[in-house]
Image 1 (cartoon, rainbow, N blue to C red):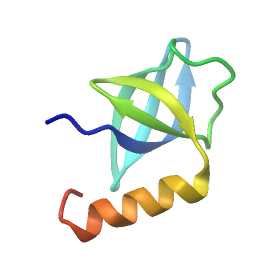
Image 2 (image 1 turned 45 degrees about the vertical axis):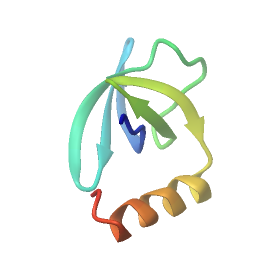
Image 3 (image 1 turned 60 degrees about the horizontal axis):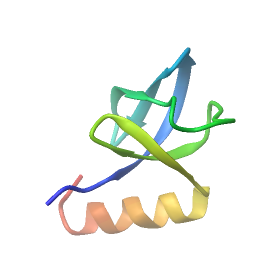
Length: 71
């Protein structure tokens, strides 16, 4: 099973963004999305940001993931 994880965009450099989730930072490709900006929450799957999420939904999803031990 694959799970896409809501991640906060910290920095953008061309087609790559530094994202953060659970205090950990990683790189994700953002060239599939238009208009992405620092501070947005994106759903990341297999190293690619696949959609922008609203903040409230991202926080709810991350809370559930923490509650069930995924983060």
